[in-house]
Image (cartoon, rainbow, N blue to C red; front, side, top):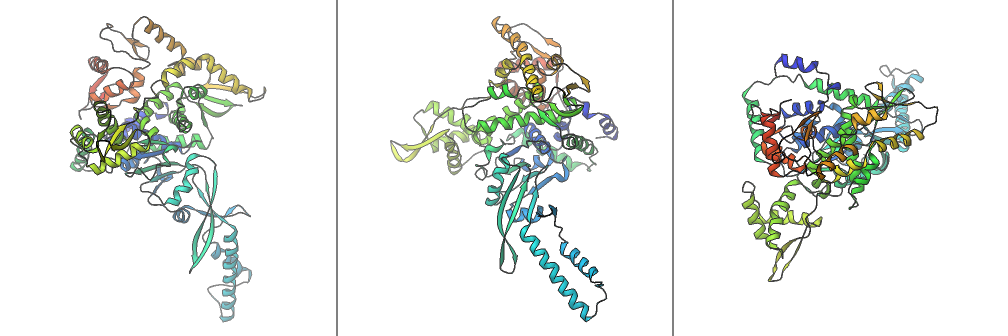
Amino acid sequence: MTDAKVARCAKVNLSSDPMVLQRFMEYLGRYAVRDEAVKKILLLAGLSTYSRDPLNLFLKGPSSIGKSFNVANALKFLGGDVWWLGGLSPTALVHEYGVLIDPESGEEVPDDWKDTRLEELLKENRLDKDELDAKEKRLAAKLKRQAQGEYREIAKRSYYMVELRHKILVFLEAPHPLTYQMLKPILSHDQINLTFKFTDKVGRGTLRTKTVVLSGWPATVFCTSDPKYVEDLATRGFTITPEMSEEKYRAANVLYGTRKAFLPEPDKELPIFAEYIGHLEAFLTLQNIVVLVPYGPELGEAYPHALARDMRDLPHFLALIEMFAAFHAFQRPVLEIDGEKKAILATMQDFLEAYGLLREFGETTRSGLPAHILRVFHEVMLPLSREQPEGFRYEELVRRHNETFPENVVSTKTMYRWTAELSAIGYVDTQPDPAAPRFKLIKVLKNPQDVLSHLLGTLAGSFSLESLKKWWNTLRQRYSSETKIALKIFDSDASLDELYEKFYCKIGAERNNVIENEKSLNQPPSIEKGTQTFSEDERERPRASFQTLDYLRQNFHAGTQQAFEKVVIESGLSKEEAEKLFLRLVDQGELAMDPEGWWRWTK
């Protein structure tokens, strides 16, 4: 990038740019290709460490698909708050990151406490350690033993504090099993401070029980090619798999080859983006600003509740909504109490963005399995089960898989492992073949439904202006009549009607009624961009059930035509309608191909 371009970028006020997240994604795209959803949620997870509900991410999938690489790029804005960890044992955690605290004073016991205490004792006895005679040396040795004894007494009653608040723990390898046990309640956000005891070697053949207190909730990222070691932790966050496609591998190779063809240039944009993250950190932590979700009760009612883990998934989803709002903190409405900013309000745009991102990895999160195993289930096992409902053998499964994915040929041993993981979550079962009991038959038990598909429409019908007013009245009742409570939009007072019109009616009841009226007339709703409406003959116009171009812009940034159509199809349109929508946007100049061959938005 030229200096002129960098200068223009520096002049952009990211705080007031509604596309600020897109700016970050475009920047990251120059270092890590594709994997838009992975990079986005990693960036938000890093920022979440400064929130009241940090996120936990589990990146699953085979080695060499970009798990660690994506993490390194997405979190480089966070600097020293990121702890890069390998096989971490509790002892290593304490020794490397722990601070000894004296419970009597509540203060830290520094590493040089013994030396400092010895200096005090020498000074009290008017001894100069550099000029000692034989008698004074004996006294100095006695004072040294006294300092050591005092330190041992302090160490016995003290505990080690590991401050995890505002930290991002990145586990590149599987930590020690005992570290797992320590992490479970931390990742669940059960208690803010947790106490553990372990034995440590303090001398020759001497073991001593030590107490450690883990304080605060960090954001965590687990990178692994072994899906088993985080099975018990997976319900405590989002599970996501980086993209595994030839298009990505080709683009990554081209990018790497291009870098080797030219001299490296200094990254002049990184400080600009890191400074913005620093502003957000200060806003959230120094001013103790939280994020409120006014439509939280309606979302809780609409969210799936068939599984016990749904009780954990909803808080994670709400935390994701909060992070989208936090990332745009300087553009969101603000709640002031007695003239002080106390909270920013998550808008419907934050819900739409979080919902679109969740759709990318909803099944991997709910199942806890990586995407490549789920792909085998949907694209190989389900078709086989329709042909052979009584069950099919491993040999047939392997043959069909290798025909379907010739670029990723697997062995029977690998298929055994994948089937066992699918069986563990109840997707399939294995039984002896009645015709040949020494062989196993694989039978599909269920075809899991997309339980999130109705979430958007359900929330649209439940959150209205009346709902917003109800939230406001409930909030107001929590304070005395003398307390001054105000809503601000860009530092100006705002009424509930203004707030709803600007930030919440995008999928509100009024919009829902319009859509229902259009459906009743057999007229598919038009796709809107701002206030402009694109209309065409009904036979040619694609449907847009609850979808807007704003929503598509948030979920598609750059890629192939197939990638764009995939996003459109996930919104509820058919493949034919997605193709028509793509061609129409190209004709109108909304989409264009960049020099690298990727389709991008032009505005």
